Image 1 (cartoon, rainbow, N blue to C red):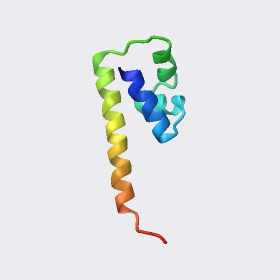
Image 2: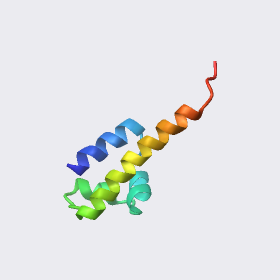
Image 3: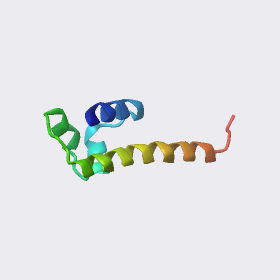
Image 4: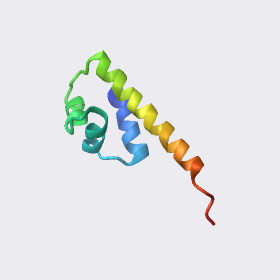
Length: 70
């Protein structure tokens, strides 16, 4: 289920649902609407899942590029 994946993503990245909605769906109410039972279209779901996986990949790449600071 998409909402479960999003909720996990929000916890892991400590991101507010409205920020996620703006970044991933250009809709600050997206997560709130999903929580209320909204069913996204398959294309929207694929785009949101792509955003989450791309976000994780970008963070991983960024952390590898940072120099070790002691």
